[in-house]
Image (cartoon, rainbow, N blue to C red; front, side):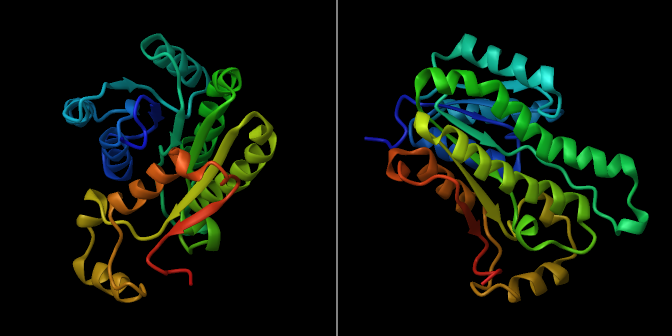
Length: 248
């Protein structure tokens, strides 16, 4: 039997990269998928079709997770299509990298709103349903940058560190209702975005990692499957690095 058969997962920012990998991995394990996208309509429609190949339902919702009202409307829309929401993956995120002296207030606010406030918005909106069910697994995608910081990414690091604090607090608040909340901190994950980088730089990054390679979206998705499943029912409030040993 598949690990997530009959469950419903809500994933934000899933039209590409890590989010897309998570959506496909959960679908492969039998979960029905509701996912959000912001502007990548064509990619979202392709993902919707790919999800259906696993014999489950996949529905894309165009929604801005950084908007509080939009998040509430999203959850209402998902529950109009599905009977429950069992798994929540807060994955939506952006970067606006620059040294602090050159970073604009707008770029700081954009990153905080998209990466951190979105986690508050979605979790707050879905909480009532999870409490009603007395079950659920919330999985927040942070970053190793949120654990250790990174020059030129003060906004991104702050947003991802904030996710870690939020995750631990929600685990304490909701644990008595059988609702778990964990965070994943990916390291250097190779996606379409990293493919556009200077390949010599990418090679140097790989060499600095103990496993001598970048991660894949599947590496992150495998952990999401575990945390979403009944195999991890005694795990909550944790931050798990998926970084090939980068922070070891």
